[in-house]
Image (cartoon, rainbow, N blue to C red):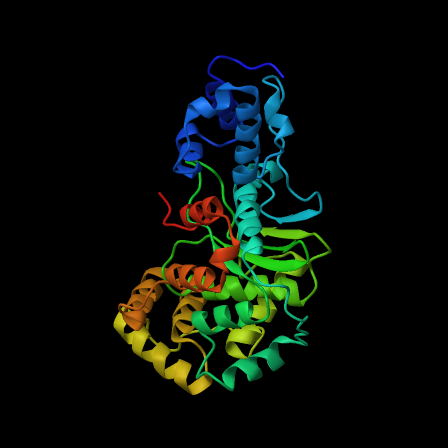
Length: 333
């Protein structure tokens, strides 16, 4: 193994060629890291192992200066993307998702007993027995209760393309990863959609479904099925479209109407407002209404972080892994 005088520089340059800029890579290294560690043969090998784990890259592909980094991603991953988006353009984001899932897996208890979810309507009935509607907190709690961790990734390299969501099998455990930054409402449908992929058995053993964009009007068969599951779970109607009657509403009028409709039909008012926005094309009004509905409530991203870290057995986890996970799920830069 040939070692150069300052081996971190060519390593960082190689990683940059794969989409990880040096500033981003350094931001994920452990607090104790010093570049001099890589200047001995054993230290260089340790460096490639650390970087490989952080970025989901095969360490052996980093040893040789002339070889390209190879992502350690499942070959069976299934992309749901626009036709003009190359599959490999999402590799960086997917690698970070798998890295985060590896850490989470190490801190969770043994797998819970398999839970059979027969269909969205029965699950909706089960959840509504405890709640007035199925909101983000309720659905998030349910996923963790049946052994499906949910991760929100908030940190990506500059200019990296990212997906709205992933559902994948991580060593026998389903995992959901979400990425949207909108504070309220949007992640509810995304979470229900990804849960739909799992319930409807769209995942094969060790498989992965990558939703570059979660689109209510998607044409792919699996995507339409996951959308119908999400809508039936959240609203009771697999084809639900909340179409306004009469004049257009202001943000305040929509907020009030969404709360009334939500209480009458057991639907989260934020979903009512966003469904209205989608059906009528009035997104600014819908977003304004959501802000009025939620007030100062914690963001959906905060709810995920709190639930995730409270579900992990910190004592069984490596300190470096906990530090890395905290960085990965933090606010996007």
